[in-house]
Length: 311
Image 1: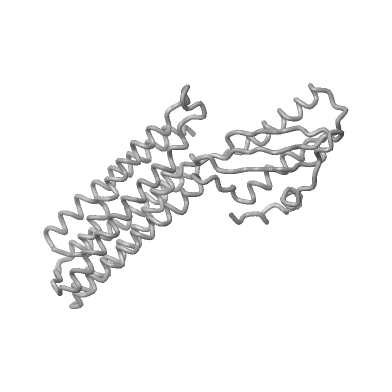
Image 2: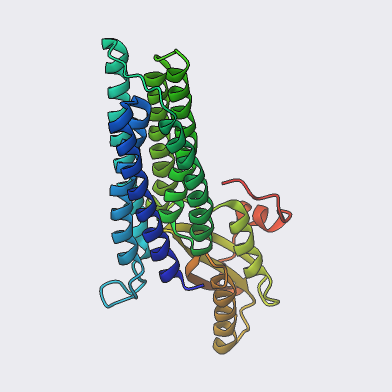
């Protein structure tokens, strides 16, 4: 899979879809006056803006390594995702304000046509397709920005459904459902922003990866026949990628070349894990007295496959 091409293509597809949806919803809103459709139009407009930002961010993150960024530019992606979250929060607050003021003032627009319902049904279908597409690309390319976009599209399905309830309520004589549905839409938008922040802050604060991945790291180190133990295992996110450092325990009568071979083989094995970027291995000879107990490393080594899935 060509990661750069895949994530850029995802950005272009999402931007184009959101612009078309914003135009369609805006036209229906102008014609029908439905507040629920209007809130969805605002949502799609916000989606279009942040999709443009994401596309620019994805272009930057897929640039090759250079002198100033020897590890590449992927670590920009969590910041791109947080920009997305800010736009989502702003859109959610605006929609909530419009719904609240409409209810409090009693000025509720009512639509009697089916055009508003039709555009919301189409929105749900398009957003589901975008959700599945972005989720697949984001997971395969390990792109937090594309995964954030997938989450937003998933929640847009629910908000479109809430807006549809409001439109149908107005159609059948319960006009108050329209601003109420817009309020529900606003909470869906705000929740999406929170999900994006929650997922990407971990990449920025150096959180440890999921336990099943830490188990895999320890086991790969212990697979070498000359390694008798590991300690001080540290794995943490640096952007969307993981850096690993650990100490391996060996007998002290090995030659320098043999010790170097152990280190290299362990580094290569751990680096084969797709999420891992850099690996640092320190070799501790027994005679120096640097072997020490490490309860966490022992626990990870003894964890059965599939038991370490929690984060």
